[in-house]
Image (tube, rainbow, N blue to C red; front, side, top):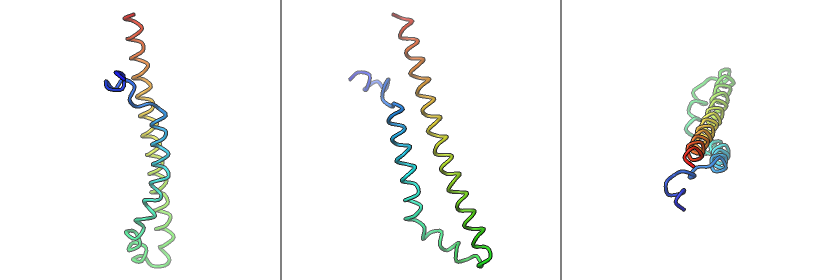
Length: 94
């Protein structure tokens, strides 16, 4: 219980992976819910530019997913380094 209260083992890679997958599936649903906000862009373009708009929105979606993945990879690496350094210091003092 003390490790939990002192944040020494609070965030584990399993928790980060869980939140990663929640975000991966939640973000597209959120975009689908708010598609009405983008619909005015779709109507504003003439028919020959609608394909360009859809391609642009698809690329934005892909970049958002890539950013989400990179953010969680960095967090997992950071907390792994923290745990490794904590174990090194703990073993050095024993």
